[in-house]
Each structure stands twice: as C-alpha cells, then as structure tokens.
Image 1 (cartoon, one colour):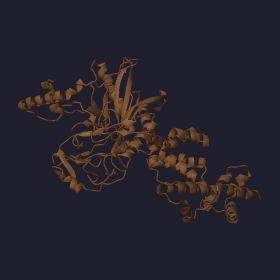
Image 2 (image 1 turned 60 degrees about the horizontal axis):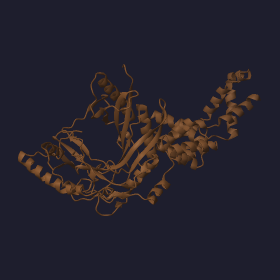
Image 3 (image 1 turned 135 degrees about the horizontal axis):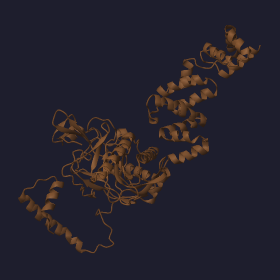
Image 4 (image 1 turned 45 degrees about the vertical axis):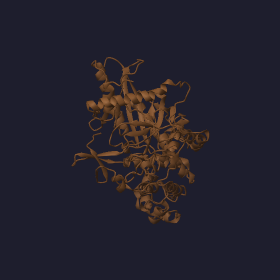
Length: 95
Length: 479
C-alpha cells in the first residue's frame, strides 16, 4: 500500500511530530509495510462475523463505588517534569 | 429580513454523575480538595496503570436512559478518543463511540409557542471528565489540577429537534429534573455539574435540508443559553442574507460581552481516531441487571404531578412549583409523612417559603429547614397554640436557622393566651379607654370594632386568638 506525502504530513500533525525529509521517507516505508501486513486480513471472508474488540471472553470487570485511594500527591507529583504549588506545570495553554 | 427563517437546534449535554469515586479509579470525586489531592496513576494517565470501571456509573447511566425512554445497549464498550491537550494526561479520553450505553430515546417538553412535543435523544454515552487548567500570571506557564480528571460524565446527545431558545430551556429543565429525581447528579449549570453545548443552524422556513451548523460552548446559565441562541441565530441570518456562507466551527460564548468568537486551534483536524479501548472489557447488561435498575427507579416528576392532583387535590400551579424542585417535593412529602395536612404544607411552601426565597435571591435547592420543624409549626397552629401572625414570625426563623418551633415558642413566650378571664379583663379595660370607638360601633359603624381588636391584640402582645378576641369584644359591647 502506498502512503502519500500528504498522509505522512497529516499523521505528523495529528501526532504532533516534526519529521525531517529523511524521517518522512522512512516513516512512509514503515507505515506502508505495516499496512500491507495487516492488509492480509482483508483476504479473509468476514461476512457475517461480528467485529471483535477483545481477544478474551471476559466481560463486566467492575469495582464497587468505594474510595480506596488516599492523598498521595507528593508521590504523584514526582512524575511531573515540573511542579508548582501542588500542580503540574505545562507550557502556557489557552482554553 | 425578507425571508422567513427557522432555527434548528440540537444539544450536547454533559452531566457529572454524583458517584463517590471516579469512573476508572478509587479516587474521591469530592469537590474543593487541595490541588491534585484526589489523583492516582490512573487518573493522571501514567503508563502501565489500568482503569477499572465503577459499576455505579453504569447503574446511573442506565437509570437516566430508562427515564428518557432509551433503548439500553446490552453489549456496550468503551473507546479511546485521541487528542492532545494538557488537561487530558493520557492524550486520549475514554468515551463511547461505537456502542454507547443508551440510544433512541426522547423526552416530552411543553412550551407556549409550540405546545407539547417530543425531543429525540440520539444517544447517551459514558465518559471521563478532564482536569482543570489554571493560567499562571507570573510564570509563563499553565498549571494542571487533575482532581476532576476521571470524574464520571454522561453525555446526552439530542436530535436536532428544537426550534427556539424556549424549547431548549424546556428540554434542559426536563433533563435536569429527571436526573435530579433519579439522584444521579445535582445538575447545576453554574457549578459545571451540567454543561450544555448548543448546535445551531438556520434554514429557510419549509426547507428540507439543514443549514451549516456551529457549536457554541461556555454556556453557564439558562439566561446565557437564551442570549447565545438569539445572538447566534441573528449572526447566521446576517451571514446568509449578505450572500456569504456559515462556516462549521466551534464558538465560545462570552456572556459579559454578549457575543461569541470562533475557537481557533492550529491544525484543527477534528480527527479523533477512535478505537476500542483495549484496557476495558465489554459490559454485558443482562435482564436481571436491567430489571434491578427498573425496580429501583424512583417516582419521577410527571408521575408525581398526577399523584399530587389525585391524592391531595392541589391546584396545578402549586403542583408545578412544588415538583419543580426535587428538594421541595421531598420536603413536601416528608412533612406530610409527619402528619401535617397536605394543603397546609403546600400553603407554607407556596406562600411564605417562596416569598422568603425570592427575598433572599435563593433557589428551592437552597432550602435548609427540616420537614420536622415545618410539621411542628403546623401542629402548633392546628392546636391553636399560636396564631397565624406569630406562626409567620416563627417560620422566618425556621427558614433562616431551622430552629425548633416548639422550643422557640416556649422560650419567647409566644403561646396564645387562652385564659379567657385575663383576656376579658384586658378587653373591659380597652372598652373603657376607647369611648369614641365604642360609641361609633354602637352607632352602627361596624368597622370600629376592628380598631378595638387591634388595641386588644397590642395589649396582649399579639398572643391572643383573633376569633376569641372578636367574640368577647362583641359580648362585652352588647352589655
């Protein structure tokens, strides 16, 4: 399957990636290979087969509505690249 | 305006469900905690963390679906909606696209302009809320609080069935009351537990095709919604009249300036690349589960209205007001449950309560007095222990501070004086002190007795029973 330059640019925008021409060429080939690989499935006749989202037959994994987590924000904030006043610092963002 | 236009409106309503914990983790949903107090690896999107569905979210979503005449999807799933925004730490929101839990419902609304009508509900899906961004004035950055991240939401998507702001408000009010009665959310627009996005387009009256629609966000009150709809309708008509085309976009309403602006985002590709969430297995809702929820459905407003009419014979207007707030309906029923006469309870709610609410610029939801104290007050008037003007005075204290009327009346010595001897003595004195009024009365001016009643009540410090005062006065005057 051929991937066009437009598709690579568009995927780059969606993924917020800036790719060099060289990287784009490589990504194009990789993506094309992957789609060919998965495309194999299209050779099968799937008429009348229900779409499947999970490979194991487990349903209804749920929890009761009970608070089990306490205040662990000291530890949680250790994951933040930068923190201030108990909050995660991110580049300036407008709503 | 040369042509006649029709406004076509559909709504996306987000409602925060009032579960104790978040939708996919055991963090509390309590409002007003310290920044990031209620967070864990799941709701901050840490790699390797595993979401586990809160069963109560499904229960409440089914309850809302049943109450809005939806089909319940017996085999439903969660999907990932992919987008980048700092309030969304996973870079995707867990939502439902392919198999939303409820579909094909409707609610009935009534407006003056269009009368009774059904507004279709396309679907209701479950999803997680995002965190909150605060912009730091001093550092050139934004701060993220994930306390709200993972709070359960249902999104109720209507069909484009509404034609005016009045219909939109009737629809929202209907949803609010249904959900409040179900106890699934408090649905407060101004606090964000209910949020409405308005999709609006214009077309020539009678046209079969829809026009291009815009989506309006940031509507925090019924009034803002009505203003935004009027404004957007005019804006689109102006564009069409000038021969231009409406652009499909999301706009943000500024209620202070009363205008909206396009929310522009660079590279605004609305391509969410939804796919089934592999971390969450399907939910299968069997008959037993559905029956359980059906059996637990409380009496909703429409049913209450019919019952109040049959059982209590209240006027329709009073029923509308009382059932127009779950808080008030609960208070009404609870007070009756304590033995008070329904008409008297209704009267206290309709007259004094409504007057005080208006005076203090409060909603029925803000009522803080107990059914117990209202029932006691009614008992005090029934037994004629206090007269009606004292009762009104006591009620003001019940309304404001939820005082116990029995104690209050006792402590302030407000009980009606039923000692006939003492009352007669006072009246004889009043008659002696007011010869002019007595002469007027005897001369045929019946009204003069009113003055004497007033003087007696004053002398008794308001604690006499007016009927008894009247009777004794007449007896004494006849002598």
